[in-house]
Every structure is written in structure tokens, then in C-alpha cells.
Image (cartoon, rainbow, N blue to C red; front, side, top):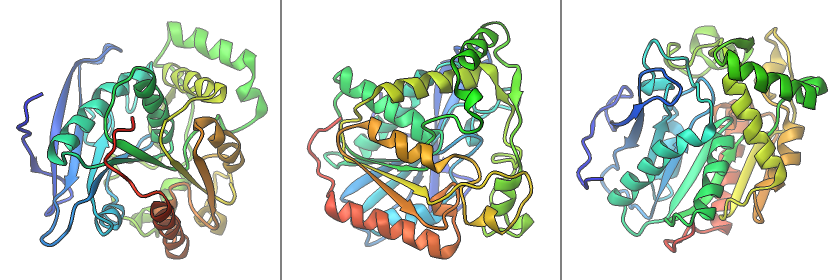
Length: 333
């Protein structure tokens, strides 16, 4: 890769720029794919001692400028990656967030690391990921470690990572998994379930929430959950359940309770309405030798999009963890 990276203005406006990674033909036959790396431009007087790479969840994209400012205030240059077929990177005719193998994301993740390393030489890199990104990134880091692809990744912060399939026990049965894999082979793009709109409604200003973001890029109803994609997710879950080793200190944040309903209520604003927090807590130790799991009372699924009290608590917990796990520039993963 050339040392020259072309940055252009981002949709977030002043202080944010983006560069596009052209990734070539889609392995799943949906044309050319790309990813988009966004950076917060360091402001005058800000000291950069490390860098952050943020990876979003399903049917999502990066818009959380408050999160970027939090890390910048602690000496981190901030970057965020919109994965293939997601957010800024999605082409209209492509199935949103579809990949038949989670390893496909290694290409854009590795390219992001190269760009960040070029711009921040000899600086440690902290990976921060949410929900589905919190499944994709540990699997990627485990592969980097096993394949001896060295770098300066020194830590991992996971925000409500998707480490198991929520819902009825039958959804996690061997029979369901076998049936899903069979369907994925013949009809990979067939929808297998729908997504409730409660979570998006609890967030967006248009429905009384606190956050203003593009509903084309992060729709309330998400995108259809397809057989091929869910089969890839379940293979990822199985790999985590067998045990991986991300190779770096890891912080896992999650709400203190889940509340599943298709009707919005007060509980929607103080619970994880997407994932089962008991599964997150139970599966997180499978990520490696150095994993700390922390509850954030009253948090939403994205703890950094919670109401102010829970959100501040989440940030305080990250700050405390960073204080006890100072990032160093030594090669780790």
C-alpha cells in the first residue's frame, strides 16, 4: 500500500474525513465491494499517544462523535471503519451487511490497521467494537495472532458484543443450525427473521430519542436477516464458544439487563433490547486470558448511546480500565 492516503470530507462535516477502500469483486456475487475509513482530524493542541479503530454493529455506521471526542481527550487519534455493504460503504443494490463468511472482513480491517499505522507510527492501537463488530473483531484478532501477522494492536474494548444467538433455546439447537446451513447453501439471501424497530425508536430524535443519525444508513427495521449471513454468524459463535485468544487485554461492557418487546416502553431506554446480557457475560471469558467483564446499569444495547447517567458510567468504566491497562507501543497482535 502506498504511504499516500487520499482523504476527503466526510458526511459528519467539519473535523471528519474519509477514505475509501476499494476491495474488488464481492465473494458473494454482489458486484464490487468497498469499505470506508473515517478519521477525526486531531485538533490544535491535542497530543496523540495512540490510536483507536472503531467497528460498528449490524445495520449500523459510525456517527458517534461523542465517542471519538472521549478517546481524543485521552490521547488517541480516532478512526472508524464502515464495513463492506454497511453505512457509507453500501451500494444500493447490495444486501445490507451481508457476508457469507466473517473472515471476509479481515481485508478491510487489515487495510485500516495499515493506514492507521502509517499515520501514527510506533503508536499503540486500541480496537473498539460494538455488537456484531464485537464478534467480528475477536475472530479477526485471533487469526492475526495464529497467523503471526504482527502489529501494534494493544487492547480491545467490546460494547455489548454478539457472542451467542438470543431468543428461544430451539434457535441454538443442533437441528436449527443444521437446517440453517442447508438453507444457506441453496438460498443464502432468503430472509429468516425480522428485526423489531423498538431499539431504533428509542435512540433517534425523530421518535423522541437523543441521537440524530441517517435513517438510510441505520434504519429502525435494520436489514433482512438472511440465511447465509446468520449461518456465518453462527459459525462465528461456535468458534468463540470453543475458545479464542485475542492476545491483548480486553474490556467487555454490557447492560445489567435485557428487555425484549416489540412495543416501546420505559424499559426500552434502560435495557438491552437487542441481545441477552446473560449470554454476553457467560461467553466473554472465551475470548482470551485477559478479559474483564463489566455491567453498566441502565444501559442500552449500545452503552455509549445510553441515557446520560448510564453513558457517563460507561465512559468512566472505560477510563478506569485504560488507567489500569496503559497502552504501549510494543508489538502485540
